[in-house]
Length: 106
Image (cartoon, rainbow, N blue to C red):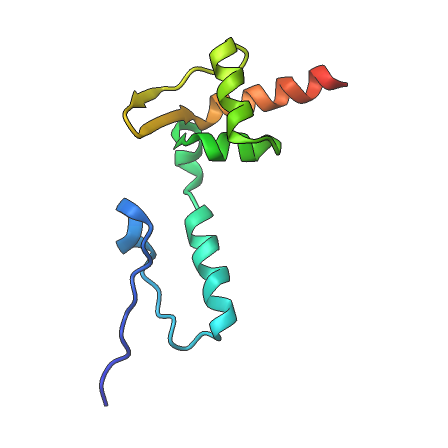
């Protein structure tokens, strides 16, 4: 009897940490597991996590274009990392922005 193959989820640098045996799982559950693994982050890293523009905009239900306009206008936080094809914001700064944005709307 051969061992079941171990599939590694393609999650970038943490792919080996999220290796899961998916053969015993129903096919429709595979997508749920993959989504949950992608969204999972250790609680200790949440404060220092870096996120991209799509996650920043998604957090407030806005478009990426809207997010970039707010950053350019100086109303949203400036990126912590700005490199070609790799612009990231601190998750804690984005959370603070959306909290203030929501309170200002009230």
